[in-house]
Length: 504
Image (cartoon, rainbow, N blue to C red; front, side, top):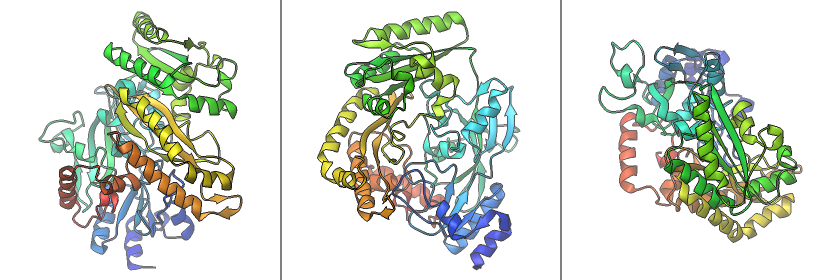
């Protein structure tokens, strides 16, 4: 047993640390089929104090530390970059600390999942507004704050989950523990406001992808769930991408308050029907059509009726738009999405079309009026890279699929575009194919660069994208320089998430 291992074991006890090959490999992957970094040690702290002690030891020994929440990230964000280092598993810190019903604020440990947090709040008729990412049944709230997460429902109304952040407890890379927002005042008894007491330091840790501190405690605004809701689903039978873009733009320009609005491209609908994945649509849809749905909430029947009327006038006014029935069995996926918590079961529907395929994602934020052109360019990219794609097809018999999962309305006139491609992992039919790994990585970098040049905003960047963003010169040098100044200040040895954004 190494001296490092013994020092860490003394902090958490032998039950919550491991260097076994089995455990280390279990923590070496995220969602993607390409990236793999095997930690030297996996450790599961119980509180900020233990994390502080771990980070101080890591600084003494110059060992990188990689925080991991739910491990649902799709860019390799919660695993080592390369092999080695300490993997900091946050899932043991999954307790609710306080529900302040009077001020509508919930405080919880950062390792708790969005699903568990909202299940607890539902007993009080409350929710978190944005329900976190689409993987929110297991994704942690600390990871959500680290990525400006969206996708788990409510993002058209509330925006990214960082919009509802009130305060954070953070362990800095050198081991100091700080609190932000109202809690910067040592006399403040409860978290109640993010802004004030000087600059918004919480903003440094929102979207930092884990490079500036370990989030240990999160306080969020919460909201009463309105008593009335309506949800409708429509088939867009012609030019579904531009028509859906027009609908989303009209909704924003008319100022209609929607909880969710989502477009599912015709590629996904057609392939899903072919594979029997959408039984609710088999009797109602042509194979070549897109799907659009909305969800609205209201505090009265009159308010609900008026919102429904305004939205239907927009959508049904478009050419060749067909309203599906009101029940789930009629094809109303919007009802299932809201009432049955389908937002945490179908969000990445492109990625689930074929069981063997795994995602190489290019998820990003972009203005509403830009995504139809990006989708067209992805078709062009697919044709340009057909030779490499065909090499994978020749081995597996299944062609990788390029496109997008749901296009989701988020803050302002922006959407989240869940584009990318799916491919086979390198292990197929009892044999490992290095060529599949090589092609997947080559194509992934290519599609990320292609989408970057559309001027999109990346939020979840992790291993591959944070470094590629720097290497292709997409990040403005002055911006990267300021990031480095901050990183050097709070983490002089670059202990935390070493390698992200090429901060080695």
